[in-house]
Image (cartoon, one colour):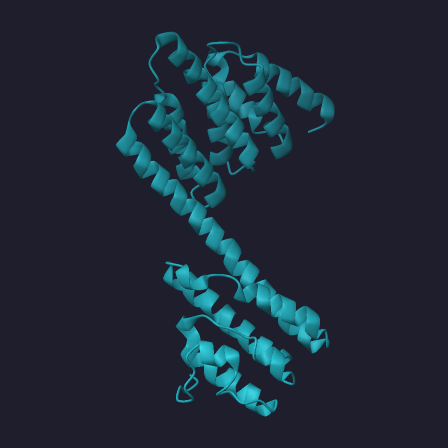
Length: 273
């Protein structure tokens, strides 16, 4: 769509009333994602007091159903319009009530269920509204659901970060950049993977940790002092203490007197697995 036509569509959409919801929705289909976001933001910011935001929600729903791209900011702008509309009504009535906003959130969550960050933001907003309405039990339930989405998103990011960090460390070692490899392995090892509750994520993060420690041992294999400064979490003593002891011995040290192994309870009888 050329610029002049886009301007005409935006002006028509922004000036239409509730009776033109269907027409607005069809016209919104022709906008690019960035143009639609601009229109949605314009519709939110220029909405008159008491003006129903349903046309914004209808246009959004129509675009999603037609498989047109919609940005997260567009959805949040529409949410803001609904919340503002019912917020004004609540001030006038003296009663906090947001049924339309919560309805918009519920339908939108279903349409964007695979986008954890957006879903988390929407659920958090719904929980805040339930709290304002005095529905504390429902609010707690939805806050928990939002927290779960945030956690899922965080774990996905963490798994990617750990995988990238370990591989970058391994490549740095291959390129003879042992200082860089050392730093990257230590960064990976600082992550508290053992506190993860998701079984699949726990396995991935644990494997990344084991790779990082083994890589660090290899990087420091000729430096007895550096090897004696490697500490690992108790959950993997059985797998890693024998490797550290073996490396210290190969570097000319005595694992039975190495400060790190002594503090980690090394007795020379654990077998590597």
